[in-house]
Image (tube, rainbow, N blue to C red):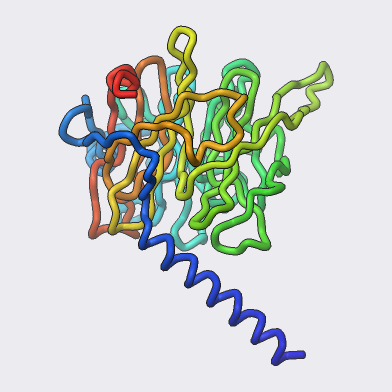
Length: 332
């Protein structure tokens, strides 16, 4: 029995290695791309580097006891940025501990990226995406094993250290296999658009899906997520956001793969009538390596990068880049 188990494990490892090799040879290559543009050279309006803000903003913070140790160093120095969204007058950034020793964190900044506070989330998950649901006043956070959590706006604003979700471990992960272990499900990215929650999985092979749920909350504050649709997606998607311009709807995807390859922001015209986006017309914008979530606030597109983390010290770029959505949409 033990020999069979080892053989099975060995086969799984071989398949994972083969998938990675195939993916690396075709990294972010899509023959359907109409054109490519360089985000760095033409469109970035402003860049923000969290390291600089930590040095200047923490000194005046009333949370020094939470984020500094006895040597005046940031306690959670191994945190890796993953998700970004706008909540009221704040920019929120999620991060996980590279060593999975500390809980995942939400960092609060004002719109000029001055540090405000940090909160411990109620898990140790990768927190690959976060999104604010303005209608229901909830922050949706990607959790573990195909689940999502939702935190109330009041807990975000008034908490000073730890927060707990109002809806925890809501399972939405069916048909969203993890790229690390296909026998587990994972919500790698998500966004809220109007009354709908979209969740998707990161994939190196051809099993990437995006699922759409209708959000409703009854008088008893019971959450209802009604499944609406599944869309086939390109590989290596890290984040998603939607933009509405007159009678057209656009889907923005951030796609990246490791430290060696440039990332891509890919734009599609979105329609519920399209269930497979792998062969649809799109435009791609070259972006810095190690891109994570993208989020849209009005006409501003914020692009989050994880390379500032200590884990990736050799490949650092600015943590957040901001650009004009309309400039990019006009290239479609």
